[in-house]
Image (cartoon, rainbow, N blue to C red; front, side):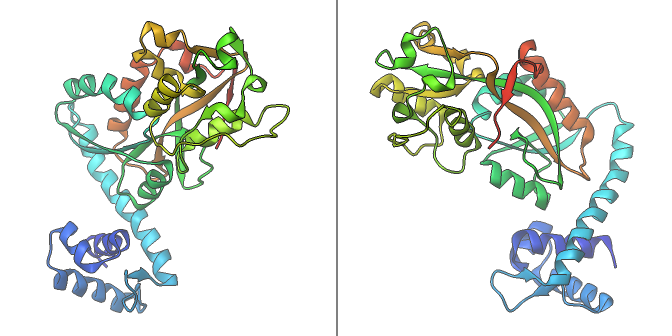
Length: 311
């Protein structure tokens, strides 16, 4: 059994194809297939069911691949011991980030991070929570920036900040006429929300469900994955929506007049860096966390007087 063979079976499991796995491992498909077959012969079991398309691991293969991922992660830590002795960070950091956080964090921290760590290549994917969780488990991402808690036992959550939710209302909305609001003030039929698959959608609905009555929940729903689109729908078509607080930074004075804050405890979301339990690139991830903390306002680093919305 070799490290290379373990890398090959993990690649086949990740891409569910011998051809794609060989391409990602920079070897020919026959070479990869031969090494996988050798490992199966050594162990005396079949790791993959080749009769299925896409290729799937057998029942025992699932356990073997899971252990292979752990062993590969531990072997990479040896390289990290050497890297940690070096003064300058270098290498790739593959990051997944949800769309309701990305536009308010990345533009603010990207230049500073690159200037401080010029030898680090930051590769970013903007994806849904479910997609990022899946890729973290597969090891194709090093870390994710997500709204938590996730209740995933195989992942570690490192809370970074707590962001309040605010209402954004047109002049025709009942919310506009109030100075501060509570969930019971929300008219369920006028709220614009994100489409399925976005954790902020569920958090917003959780805020709304705190009303004394949820009858008449038949509001028009526009299917979008963009917070910015929700804001424009209010600007152009009236109604109201719920925004994360960091989205206020780019609002005009006229738009800020449409913002209404919740009474305490203010509904909020916890934003965390999420990693595998056997995670690598610790110094890079810590550097990313530090950069985010330097950007977010001090009040967002404290959980007090906030009610964290789950999804």
